Length: 336
Ligand SMILES: [Zn+2]
Ligand SMILES: [Zn+2]
Ligand SMILES: [Zn+2]
Image (tube, rainbow, N blue to C red; front, side):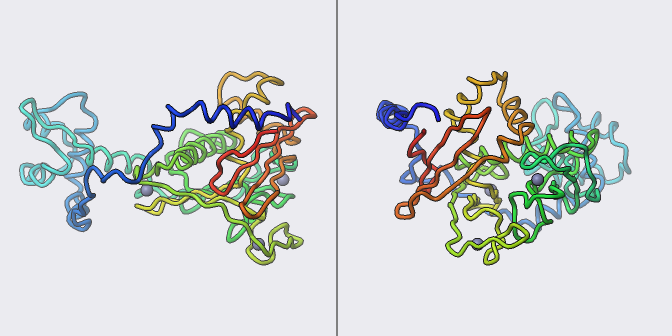
């Protein structure tokens, strides 16, 4: 344990943050604008054409606005009706400026989505051992990919995710197909982990990483938790008895996580590990925790009070522990 009086220090510290609290988002502010629904079928109708996609892609490749004739010369496709196709894109996807044509944000999004491979590529990777130990128990792990979803599972322990996912899964989330090109095995895993955690950090701060909308979160506790031989609850099929669900109110983007995962980003945990094993960046820290099975595998999360809810997460590292207790909104209540 590190200093038992850290909880008191913490509350004093929060009082001193009155200036910072002015930055808290407030729901009483009127929205700056309402998101108007342009007809989705109109928008997709405009870009459902090879020549128009090629025009967008050609504009995306330019460093500066390009003239009508230069743009037509650059195209690799049938140039018939070029004027017509370009005019269809003008306004929503393409801007005509005094210096020439350039992409608008919507046009850039179309090209980025195509480059991510979401609409055009559907790779499948069967679950295969990748030569890394499970961060929870040290047993061999397998990585697989299907339907734009990456799965990493342990061949022995229950992992952390339950429900309708492969037994032993501790990663199971959307990852764009482009993330698999130029990478293999552990590189894919590392990239997917960064991708997942970056989105989680955004959700934790109330911002949807997919659309920028408002994200809320809720801590769930299974009140009928009972473990089966598969290591999952017989009632709700979850591996842990309590977990966190983040949801975007605009696009329903979701991020599920254990209660302990956000706690690993808590300054008390970061400094606790740093004092014992210095690291240079947040990325190094996460790799360090990942490669130290007695750390991730030894983490506990326990409900210490139900009304109001208090969950204590305890992280072991090099023979010592640090505990962070959070409330039903993941706010820190105590550090021990
Ligand atoms: Zn395992
Ligand atoms: Zn349950
Ligand atoms: Zn969203």
